[in-house]
Image (tube, rainbow, N blue to C red):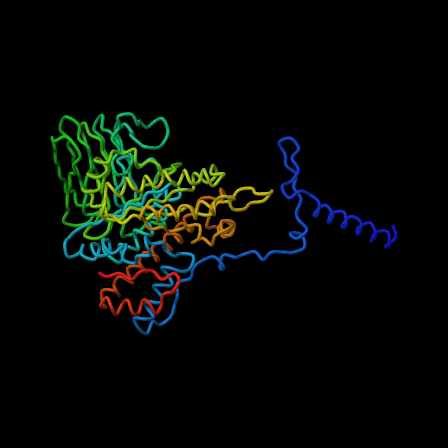
Length: 486
């Protein structure tokens, strides 16, 4: 074939393809259950720059802060600007003050204040939570893995536990192996009923992602709802061979506690009686305890399944100070319209109200879902309604007086999951973080909270007038958060 004929052939083919790009319907052509799609001419001719992980990851600032004004400005920018920012109720920078004040005084008073981190499978295995726990304990003191269930269905990266004995699972979520009718759930929204004696073995994890602080504990507490008859609990420290035993006969919600002379990393707990065991609190006080309460496949609508009085008494006994609710991801594939999203968020608002009524003095933080990818027009992209859900969740949290933090925004927003996956920071389901990615997200969350704490410590050094003057100098006038007094 002559060169001119070859050139003419390719010119005709390219022109035909270009014409198809122009005239082919943007929604494709459906043939039975199959949809044929064709790229637009713009997409063929204009090559969009692909974001890299360096474009998405947040880098901590490294600069010399010469004075309080510079420190306040940095806090303002971190808290109220950028992809890892907070949304606080009424932009009130004092929202976390009660927690910070109590956490600072734990060493003086010998207290343990608790942070409960509820979430779906994104936090399962203690992911994200483990970094938040470690960072807070480095600042305020404390140790241990926090509150754990009597039987752990999903192993964690932080702590090893195994339980033998006949136990009846009671849960607000999960498969048919758990009962709901007439059940008693407690603050983990799941409990285990003792039928026969049960033995629980505890030991620190030696894994790569385990925290040394979480691996040592000196306080053991058993939170329960006792039925008729005695509940007996025995504890043995496998390192020192020290042992303790205690029994209770009173019915209702209560707690059995032991305080050891020194911390250990290995112990055995034996329980017998007729009780619902809400949780085992494994801590090393004084300081902050952070509990990981992973709830696989849940929507976040399970809190109201726990009677208010039951939840309130449990929160009082364990001294809940911060309650984090991280949900939304499991519902993303099913939220197809704005009306359905509004209904979903409305029910979540009811859950926040229920938790606040049960624990009125606690800080409540709602965390929205990560970016998630699905097939859109023949290629992986962000779920179409996910950005709308993220914004609606922000509005819902604000309306119900809770703080809000967005994993979707912290990742980098639209299509950021594709980059995180490419870099090995998210799994092949384009939904869940890998352990490395979860640690990055845990650090993002910790940085945001600790930056609020830094601002809290600055505010304590200044008079209200002096702080307000500096705050007004650094805040953006049109969106200026409200200064607060201590």
